[in-house]
Length: 279
Image: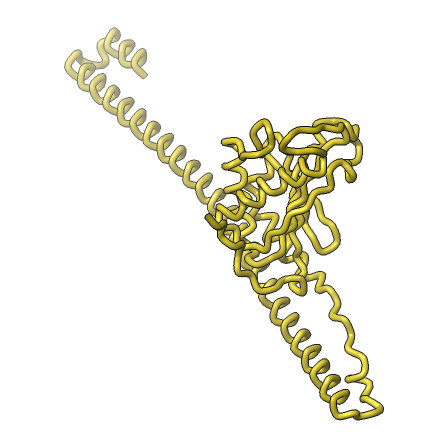
């Protein structure tokens, strides 16, 4: 456009004053167009950022919805399970009363009290809740399913100081995270198992691998108790008698602590915590 104005000025079709005015108007138009283009670009970037935020929020809301659906399923299964247990208890009371009164023959529904079946739906719901609760530690532990239990495998190197008697700094963080995750299913039985390799080792503290495994289990157990994990804790040692598949039994990678978390509500009992140490 500018070169057109210059041509008009050269031919005398446009006066110098008129040319200057048109040149000012051209510059103003160019500036306005540039400003609008910049504003449009900024609005586009803001819109794209907002869309990204909305996409993230949508993913978060979907995850929250999935969790609510799992918890709702858990509540429904727990209610049905409670009704089944009440019926079993009523049948057992009737059976005992009949025996006390010497009634014979007993009605079929009293004579045989069926064992309640494991509620697989409830187990799956509990497993999903526990898996989600333990998601923050999945970079440091492994999970596997065993019938009605979930096993949390903790490499010993993630847990203790050299000597196996105290938690390492990162072990303290890990135990704290585990205790928080286990709190998603309060009251469940958790068996803490210590495993070693098969290399014989002897010391004043640990005369054999059995004591070494038990010592590692106790370090984990005491750590979980100190963090207030609301579960039923017990400890055991398998020494090197249950090696992991695919790993040399003498390999250091066999040294681990496993948390066996029982998901079957029938295994739960009233939980009062561990007794305080005396002295």
